[in-house]
Amino acid sequence: MGNSKPFRIKSITEIHRLMGLPKPQHPLIGFIDLSGLRDKSDITSVLFDLYVISLKRGCDKLIYGQQKYDFDEGLMAFLAPGQILRGEENGVPAKLEGWMLFVHPDFLWGTSLANKIKKYEYFDYSVSEALFLSDKEETLINDIVENIKNEYHANIDKFSQNIMISHLETLLNYAERFYQRQFITRKISNHQILDRLETLLSDYFNNDDLISKGLPTVQYISENLNVSPTYLRSLLKTLTGQSTQQHIHNKLIERAKEKLSTTDLSVSEIAYELGFEHPQSFSKLFKAKTEISPLEFRRSFN
Image (cartoon, rainbow, N blue to C red):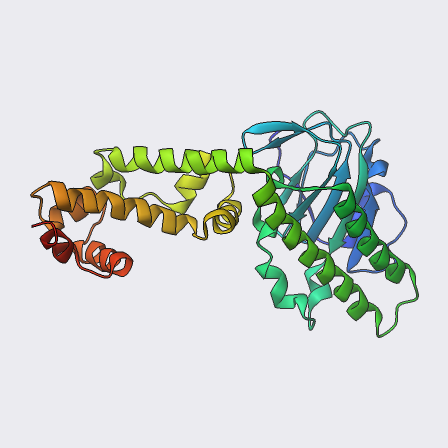
């Protein structure tokens, strides 16, 4: 797979033309049977102007975070418009099965999903942070998709869009539930991420170069943990009830309390050492987190 510019697809019709399929029955929603991709070895990377939902089986191995998993279970991935879908590393697997569902944003206009779909954070996860389904979950998802397909193949009338939207929203809600389950049940990999986060933040705030580096950003943290910012936030929210930014602030306040209680540095000097350009910003954050000012905290030790 090369580094060539991804092929851009703007419509369902383009997908059918690319795959050599008949003209789609609906211009704004479509399906592809993944078993039909086995002979498409030239597929590398595609940028979609569409929502893409896929369920795969038979990919042998998947890189998930920093680990590789063998899996026989169904695997779901979600892409929002503007994201890139890359081909399999070693070409299309011989045993690949499953489906892809494509939804043009125009299909959502005037429906309950038009704005709500942006609230499903897993559309911003990377493909390596896919959803692993149990057999029972996969059957449920496939049944919902079958309902959408049945409506898709029926004669289009004034009820068709709302019925398909209703089924689609049900699918997305179940995916939300299953992701929450995954955050909890994949304890080893997820708690490794928590341990690495703690180590990363400790090392960062132990560095004497904070004055020039500034505070760690969510992007910096997620890149060093090899997960997408949205996935990391969702994982932390589920396991700890706090966002990535809150974890950064908590570690910062820990270090600030240490310096306030064990050194004679002024509040301004501590603020600069912790990466703040303006001491007022540090004092404001400290008080928001502890309900007392840095000076009040220091006085409590004297």
